[in-house]
Image 1: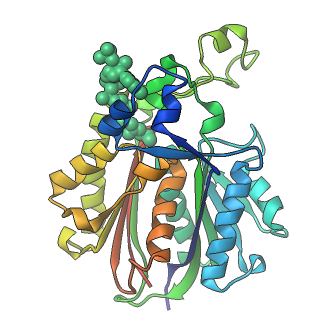
Image 2: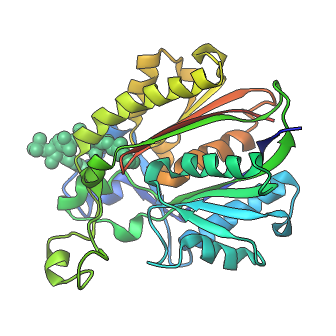
Length: 335
Ligand code: UT7
């Protein structure tokens, strides 16, 4: 019997510090109204000195294992998506591996920025479908706060980001057409726009990788052509969402819950409007958590499953857009 992967457990963890829009006004020339009106964000969570990307990921992992009724020893492979590596090398997945004492199972970091969780989900699903592994931990983990320009110069980027990790435990099951599991994942990229949303340094393409001049020019902080990114996001997200549903022979009306990447509430409202998706079918948490990049979608999924708003048999559509550019979508049947 051919195999399919289902999500057996979910978990999430966010920064301990609540940073409100009012807090940001103390460091930069901005206003609570500007941030809330343009992005929908009221507050975000940033890490404190006790937290690291890998500890957020570990907490999310333990929750996912508990929900699945499994133990660390049951995991065969770890895939961790992030754009904010804990160190230059090795990848954050290795520090998560250490944190949860994962024995000698393989772990892989995947860099596809805000679409990273969906890229990792596609790979985890493929590893299961090919029979390579039976249980794959797929994590999105991000700590932005330690790398943001909190002065007025960085205000466009800094106000949107939060710290958080989400984890899902993928498990092999036999294919049953109406049964639960990941039905389709589609991923895309456009490297020609890589420099429109990026952090230039440190860079292994230069010697030294970072210098005083680059620091003075704030090349170690993320820079974004916000409007350009916004326009591409509201075009690409509906495109890939429909492509993915079509590949699964599903219609928009079949979907019970739509989860979008949490970069800007206005982006998600525009996507929902274009596709005529009713408000009650969309779940957002950016108002409370800001943009946790690769962590955003698995955190949303964990929140939805924990609150009981996901019933077995329901169809969930997940869609993201981010730096790279990358965009991706997945559809799965819960259960
Ligand atoms: O997660 C990865 C994908 N990322 C995204 O999808 C983000 C997409 N982009 C966006 O969400 C929006 O472009 C932002 C929220 C980042 C910025 O909003 P915007 O409406 O596109 O603003 P803008 O960058 O075009 O700037 C408009 C004005 C500028 O002032 P002037 O030149 O008109 O005088 C900015 O300097 O707003 C100013 N501005 C701010 N003012 C107060 C930019 N950021 C701020 C701020 N507070 N935080």
